Amino acid sequence: MNRYSDEQIQSIRRLRELGATYSEIAAELGIVIPKSSLTYICRDIRHSTEYTNKINELNRSHLMAARKKALKANKKLLNDRVSRISQLAVVAVESVEDKLAYKMMLAMLYLGEGRKRSSYRGLSLGNSDPDVLVAYIGLLEVCYGKARAEMRARVQYRHDQDIVRLTEYWSEQLGFCREQFYKTTPDSRTKSKPTKDNDYMGVCVVSCSGADIQLELAMIAKRFAEKLRGYSSVD
Image (cartoon, rainbow, N blue to C red; front, top):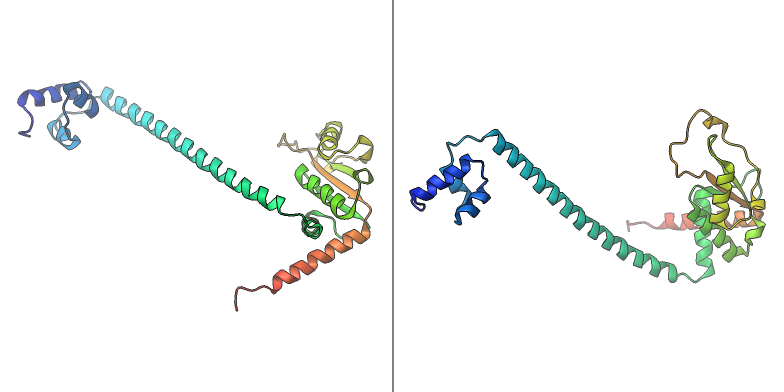
């Protein structure tokens, strides 16, 4: 401790007893002193409640500042990542010009979301996401020349939902006129169960004739799955 004069040591201790922090002591005295040296000089000074509260508040402030900085940095990283992936998506979409590629997309979409062959001989696909249905309708138009006016829609909804509002929503999303929607009744199983998600707009089912199209899409999906099954990472 010979590096510091008795006067400096007394000043350090006095400021410490008054509740000054290490950085405040160094700034007040205009000296550069390691924290370990300050700790040694003030080793026998007990922390007051005010000092403890002050340190806790400073720690909280520093933690909040660090969190804000981290959130800002993470947000920038996320935005950069989303922007990069978005550009990749644009390139992928713009590179698809072959009608057969669109038909393959439609087959995969119908495999996952469409109604399979049953008593209903035609095309029928339902989803709660408008983008899925917009893609489905667009692919039918491109691949098979199915006009939007040929299609019909039915909204499956919960008991406490307003069918008029839902029909307006789906009509706007899909570009259908009101007359293209079948009359429907709410799901009776939801009568005593309030809808928790205010953004839920029911499930819209789009249907049209096309038994042969349905069969072709099923065959494409099946053959494609068989082709993929033939690939193996093991030689």
